[in-house]
Image (cartoon, rainbow, N blue to C red; front, side, top):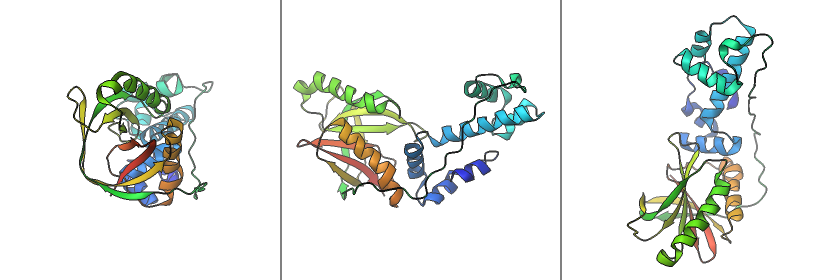
Length: 255
């Protein structure tokens, strides 16, 4: 997969082709890549291109605009800004004494070791209308942000509205980076945002705990061990954590 990316850094990289390598749809491929690599696919491709661009400017006599176009930048200005953010210097400053950064190709293991068995069910759930409030976050911060935000909302609203029933993660426009974490109630609350989720099939993993570390552990196992070893396609529906009876159901929508 990453070999194909490297071979096509100077061309348009087809996400459809990348998805076929894994036998899943594009959305599932993007989610898998982000969780396994620790970086979104779009950022990975960008860093690989900028890494190679630095080498090209160091070794050759290419014009900046030629290198920019070679690596799919529309103009020299946008390329120069991205290059400086990555390498710490402007493209025009590259010479034989320059120290440049490199971002190596990621190589995945062909077989993902399954360390533990994961019990799951496939359940059909009808359309849901949930009401709540969210906080902006990202892949690096969500492990700390979600539990802190949950306790904050719980302390503020539990007496008024009761227990929080769901946690939900949404993703940015590229569907690769965590964008927001929500605390949600299963009853109408006018002061909160309404989240409508369509009828769907869901993978349900039961966690005999409501401890954030236990929930995060099942999420990591899902992406790092379970999903690469099966052929389920994920729907573009946010993941849910359903809190009830001192347990948590980790829910992922599938086709």
